[in-house]
Image 1: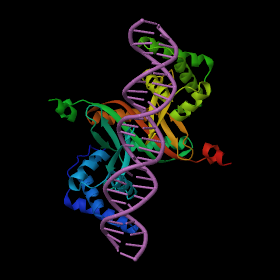
Image 2: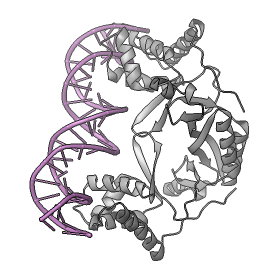
Image 3: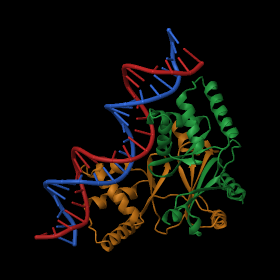
Image 4: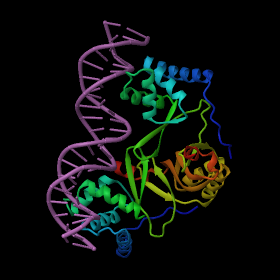
Length: 165
Length: 165
DNA sequence: TTCGCTGCAAAGGATTTGCATTCTA
DNA sequence: TAGAATGCAAATCCTTTGCAGCGAA
């Protein structure tokens, strides 16, 4: 099993590559580069890997208070199409978005019951079993969603626990 | 791996057991039995195992046209607490509900990309791997959600395909 | 000078809530 | 009879849309 990924703050060089990827997508789709699009992607890259609309909107407004919700939603859709972010829904009625690593590695999620922290992991054995099961039922697997919910055994290192101190 | 479960129409005897379970929950919680609650549970038991609010509401209205949405939602919440149904969210913005078998067997889902049909399955190997992964990350698994999305290889037996004929 | 893009506000869809009324225990 | 449950409508929450004006190419 793959080790827990440690999320480092994004470096300038990496951010540039995301901007280039978005730019390329815009050009290819004959869409325009705008100030707002730059700001939104900038903010996304400064947020933690998993974020919600509310956070993105309020952070974006700090840079340019005229940015509206509609622009946020329209561009999240665009970034999803450009495969720069992926849309997730861990709970009812609320969307989460996730920055897709440039290396494009698939992974599943472990969600901490105590603090809601999301940990990514990948396990080849499970992926293989999924293929096998689906095939056995007469289908061809296209994609999947696997979220594991768990209690933290080392409460001291849990974000939630820290907040209680 | 467990075979695909064939869903038989619910027998009167089984329905009675669901009603008894709900009744017991209501009594224990010092809540009241009402005509609407009976109707709603009746309808749920007559629907396919996975259903949505819209279907439940329209079917319930056929029995008692005065039943309102609020009552439906309030009772779905209650039935969830009573562990008679479970709330699911396969896609954004729409909830699905699922009748929990009296035998209470856990299972995962395969969702057909063609017709949306939901097939249940259980695989011990995967369950064991999940435990192992989570433990390795310093957590204790409490529950999980695994949904596999797939294309149907036998289009002829696909609900979606049939509708096209 | 085009259109795509934006902000705003209004519209939507799903779910919830407030309240007067009805009804169960 | 108390207070739980209901139906209705209004209110929320999140997201989408329509439109006139703005701005990138």
